[in-house]
Length: 241
Image (cartoon, rainbow, N blue to C red; front, top):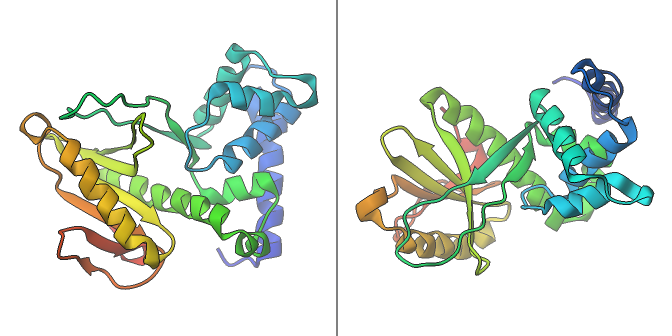
């Protein structure tokens, strides 16, 4: 916590080396450290996005060609068993329409700093590419939502449909309670995100699935409050148990 950026990056780099060369093998299966490193970098590049297994297989195989699907799933399983990654599974509510939903999970590192270390980038690179930084900010928000949801016995999913509509996080709690959130690093994107949440909520058959407990846009900064349309604006610093 008290380290400067150089020290923190060095520690994280050594941690990933330990994962790829020692911890993976301690699970009882031999895995190529180069493939593990390429997989972690591929997952980091696709932070906050659903990526096809075939694309991951190409990235992991590198110049030697895609690795086998079974091998890729074994690598992904190893990272989960080491508590390095966690999936946001597809949330499948009762819908008013027949819109086809996409089922591929979104894979996140349990902490976004791990993904940045896998890519070998730091604050300078993040400031130079704010679009990519937005995806890593989403990973940070998802980490916090997971932490605050787990004591409530809740889960977090993501909603995607075949028309390209999406919601970043849907928190489900026991008793059919749920809430949906969009993540936007820039407060200037709140209007668009709020409209997207309201459009999403209008598609849910609340007679079968229940109405949302809350709709919210989580931002990097700015004021917290409830908009006239009912959507909450929540700076990440306002999140808490």
